[in-house]
Image (tube, rainbow, N blue to C red; front, side, top):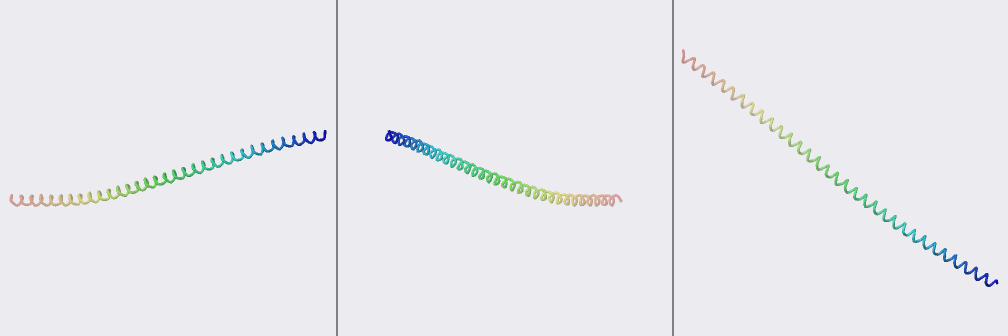
Length: 118
């Protein structure tokens, strides 16, 4: 009876040890799986952050290019306006000179006609 009790106790201990071993193995597997998932999530977050950083950099580069293009265009238009204003002033000056010469010729012709009439 004592031997049977010892045998039952040993069998009970063996079962308990097996249950504990299975539980420990299951927990280790669960922890490994959790670590794998966390690593995958961290990699996903890092990849997303990298992609976002690249997109932001590209957007900033595009914005700088557009801004530079607008500034260049603005400078070109200002230069064109200045050249046009100078050309108009030159034309105005030439026209005033022609008008004065025309008036002088008309005056000379008028004086000549008066002189011939006299």
